Amino acid sequence: MIVISTAVGCTTGTDEQSGSAQPQRDTSAKSTRSQGRELTAAEEVLVRRAEQLLIKECMTDKGYPYRIGPLPTVDDLKGNGAFLTDVGWARRNGYGSRLQAKAQKIDDPNGAYANALPREEGTRYTDALLGSPSSAMLTAELPAGGTVRTPRDSCLTEARGRLYGDFETWFRAEKTATNLTPLYAADLAKNRRFTDAVEQWSVCMRIAGHDYATPTKAREGLPKLTRGLNEQKAFAVEVRLAVAEATCAGQTHLTRTIRALEAEYREKLLDRYGDAVATHQRMNLDALARAEKITGSAA
Image (cartoon, rainbow, N blue to C red; front, top):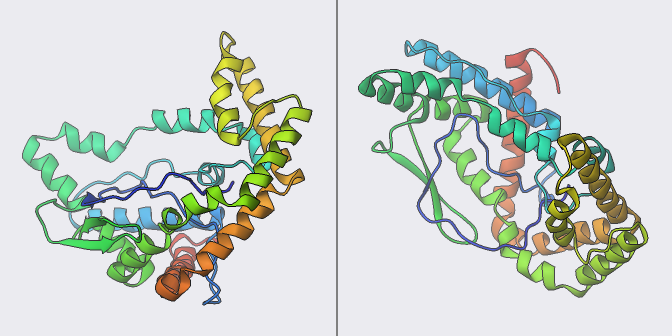
């Protein structure tokens, strides 16, 4: 999948307090300033597993129980995108409706434990895990404007500090490196090379029996196609449309054009943000090496 979004906005004063949820990855292009790379989805799953083990160790040291819940799968992490380009993923998951339904059914065992405690005890548990909103906060500026912040002291920040080597440096680099898309998404969406590629994609889809002008229109049209069908038949329709979208993205110039344009737009940002991108890639690879030791396995 390609994760570019044409929606441009900013976040101001956002608190980040989560033991499992992660912001959507912005891995559409790599910094040419470094020899680093983005983690694969399988490697990211391994890092998240190690993070959970470190959180559990920290909570145990503080005298609290902690249960490691289900981790995202490779398909879960590959499923966030505005354009379907992976035919295999589309064949397995359609547009991801079943993955989304599964995610909504996953309970947070630690949140449930905290909620079952008396109020003050539950607050102490949550503060130990995620940090207190009233404690010292670490703030990072986002490239498109606004800020995001997180408590400095919690088992989550301690785990990430051990994993990435320096939580503060990683946090700020991560918030920069994964939020560059809003700086160029609107311009990319108006670029003639992009609009021409979308037109070619639309012709391919029409030949395949799906008359949609854009991938967005195809997804918007899915509910009409599945209305009145049972779950199995509706999913089969979803898969056929998704596979057609991904196939046409590859058969036309859409996939290649988006990747080329993203690389070009991001290259222009490297003078200002290249160091953060390089730092983010380096620290992620360092975390991967530590995760392999912590879990005793490789991605």
